[in-house]
Image (cartoon, rainbow over all chains, first blue to last red; front, side, top):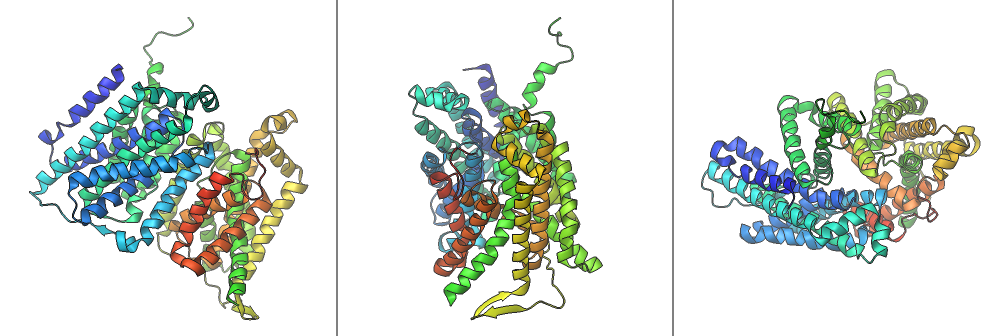
Length: 311
Length: 288
């Protein structure tokens, strides 16, 4: 295991200590931080490792939220609903991936963007099951007070994050990860030397959806109310990309740190400039892409005190 | 008679869809950039028409002449100052960048115009014509004719003018165009400006028909996606074919399975088309 991956696990372990210090607001932030990190790490599997510009994160977040939400509303316990949300998202994504991942570049980006639209409209129109545009109320689990609830959902989200991080590290060390990086560098060549690229890409797409779906399930249980325009928000697809770009594409530690940095920025902007927060996010994206396209980690090579090259 | 009404509605709406999509298609085809600001450009054009009509009583037909140069300059500047810096970057970067620009523009519009739905209502209203029980509102009919005219103007620019031939040349083979002495950066900016101008004009026409709100920009953008993929990229005839096909499918789909499912149907069709025939109806294979 590389040093960066060890640091990532240590970082996640440190986050687990948050309830010792925090009040309800800190726990809420911590839960969102875990959720963003799950999204960024998951996106990294298909976007960073395999190099496919996926905009489908929101589609599977919403799918997981609705699978989890509907099951919880039908009285299924949380311990079963969330794994089912994750596995359901995995299966849907892997099957769709087998067809969609034959597309490359712009066409794949458009297709993955459209998935959000398709899922949202399907949920909107399946009024009997999902409540349609009216949203879905999820019954409160037996509550033991505000703090106990906040702590519970924080650890639930944290648990999903831990599993996600272990998955991503396992993928990066396995034959699957090697195959994905071959696909990123030259897919045709990878195919020629006998790599089953369709299978690899489908598994990667499925894995990138699985934990996002589980996080969606936790989110639904946590906020008790979801509606299609909330969970199928295209911003959930773009945010993980911004986080990955902040931290540096491809590195699990980088994207996780990117997620935390992004959440910090978002929170500051939300607090101070609520009316123009999406515009400020836009400015951030533009500045990031124009001036720091390889993320914060690329700053390493730009130390003023470093020894000059070619001297 | 119902069938005839559906067909006429589809033709009218299809030309408007083509007008929405054509600028998007041009930018995608020539710059190889998926331009997510397109929807907000259209809405901004609609606000321009609304403002000119409410404030100065300028008819939307004349607003077209104001919108086109204004949006051309706007698009040209955005491309030259911002987009051109990452034009050779992979799709992830260009797409995310245009998304960021769209967030800024859309937020600015929400800030200044609020998210209320507005409507440009002509006084006196233009009424509607009916031929053999087929009813078409006159303003919609004129908007359709204007949309067709705009599409035709683009076709003429691309066919007849030197700059148009250069745009097509860059689209076909960028490197060869450079070798023939075409200034690619300037062509990129002109193509993006043209795309923005077409979006602004489309917005002026949309203001006559649909309610205006910053929140509608994603719906326009979604239509542009579907039309481009259905019809094939970068060609004027492809956009027209895609627009009419989309309107037909939506019209027939609404009549058969209910209007709630029309959008789902069009996006499912988009994905099926991407998988089975990514070059679109009129596109040529290997011509991406």
